[in-house]
Image (cartoon, rainbow, N blue to C red; front, side, top):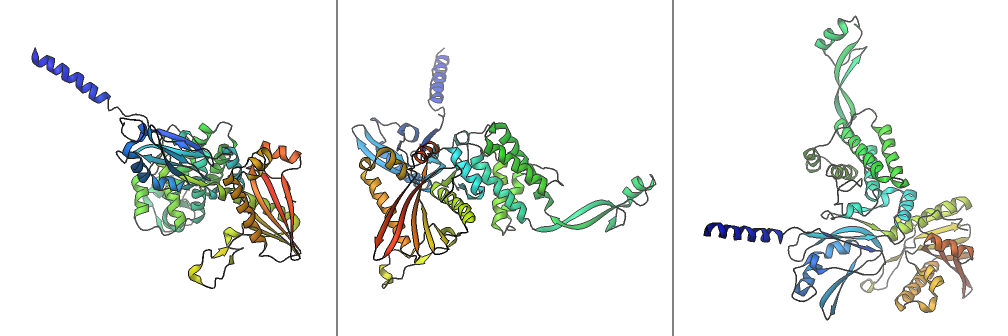
Length: 479
């Protein structure tokens, strides 16, 4: 009986040992850009300590996740208290999703999502307006646990469709073996087929032929069609009434009808895609990015919002997105008034700074975001992804925190420096801040969605303008 009892005790011990090591669900932290810091729970990313807190593992956690946090503009802060050390993550002006590694194993133990504070709907409107090529940027990091269900499906599917559209436009021609029934023979006549089908039916002029034909890569085109159909199906399944998801599903159909109506879909093999990427035959970046996107769909990495929980790591610089939105407003309004628009992102507004001693150079050039010229008038526009205008109105300048006041002053000094670069009869320096649509409507109703100040010095007159626009909504007339 002793061996049996020992075995039973051992079995119970084995069960306790196994149950104590059951994998726990990976923790997903959620923050908002420019929002309050998020405290990282140590029990999810470090061994249990005798006292609360991280013990010696806080620095290891920060070191292992430094690159991921930096990529989404998150600053990590350590704070000491009676219970030990705490780790807080302070989001900046980027949205995105990144994995977080365990301080003990170095493996992915959770993830972080930074959501846009103006909501996904506003982001979708701007992306739809300015083009899906603008966002987001995919990161070379592991998958993010739980992220696929936390963001709308179009956040990742939109840029993937943009990659595939670019790929379809850039496919280079190649030779394929065509097999067709012709009236005038071409290439090699397939005699067994001719005798067995055309000849016995009296259709002597129907000649089956095989010949080399110049065309785009037929196999890749079939893979692209399968990918588009898969994304469309997933978007329709999870999109519901989401008009951005439905719009992207319609885009997938248009791409199929325009480029791929003559081919049947074919599921790509992972080895085929890896062979294309690793074979050294791809020189064009647009082709490599397109094939990479196909591989993501094959691997089901949270692109269409399906049942999978893990998603790709990505980042969306919201300040650049806001700048592109303001640029689109400027272009639309300038088109109605005959203005000429130049933008910094294209290098059209660069002013080099010539230093007497290059060794002491602190800044090489000034680059205003947008410059609009109408005859002898110039408007210099700087898009700021901040909440200064709405905070001044809702809380009052006296309630501003000192850091916010300093940031606002820096904005004013910057736009005035830009305005000093231009000689014109009328110079307007405009700072444009984003507003929530209800806030914008309330301010506009009271005539407070913009504010002016006139500056005079040495015979020079500059009009300073603070302007608020709704984030994501189509803006009213600029003038």
